[in-house]
Image 1 (tube, rainbow, N blue to C red):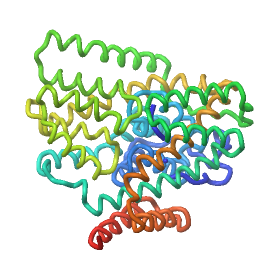
Image 2: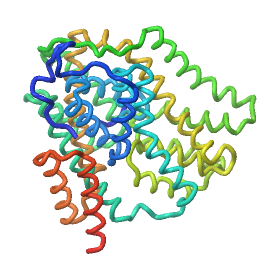
Image 3: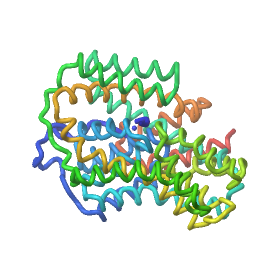
Length: 418
């Protein structure tokens, strides 16, 4: 599960359109998905919570590939799955739009820009201190505005009444007082139980997501997921292949992490530092570089794969590590989507999802403060820059990539004034 980010209201009436209504466009091509996701991969700064906000802005509000409720249900599904939730949501949207090739295109477009940048860092700038650059701090401030817009928009849609609004606040308070990925998972489970038992069943027509996957494909994905999780370590006992060891370690990290993003860092540290594949200093330098690029934090694996001492390393090592850490995300999404419509169509499940979606708003609210606000807003000048970015998003309706560019320039300017 992971944490959930620019959202505003969808186009009027879009949230309740029928399956063939013109406001929600049902299908497209993989190249279209690649083009849109690549733009997101180049501009989506701010971590997994901000990514979900960028996705909402692009896929729901701007392009209307799915409606607000369907998007929220996909986010809820990915909260229950281990792995990088924002990437999994993107993969799911791509699959729904253009089949398995669409899912692959969504992943490539969103992942490749940051992966390439981190390989360049590994090969040429691994010792650079990018963590304190002014423009980087401006990107972190931009994330504050993006997440704030996401909280506002999703709260209007998913927690509009007293019961669900209270549930969102309770979830935020619990996570702010006791921040924990385990508690976050527990909150979502309890919110689902509360919604199932006490919230009225949503008065909406169920519109299938129509993911073009068979249940046989879903079952095969689950079998492969667990087969690799159990089989790779066993194969390592009988093989001295360094490539197999790297693939196994990164696959395990991608398969077992709940919370995504920064939560995977301890697993990766234990995977690469103790065996001597990379020093702790190099690991931390790469982590600093990972903060400077857009896209999913899991692309940190590309840096590690490129920078490791033993082979595979360089571009080959980056490809092995990156493919291994994201493969579980693909298998989990493919395994879950064919069964998701049958599950969420049940009235009780829809009521449970109503509770889960309200809790996701609370999780967003908690994340807005920590880590987004606490890591970005250090001075009154930072707050002014965040307010400008928020106004550009909410009042002037500028695209997020323009706001990101303005914030980066503002952060660089502020660094010269300090």
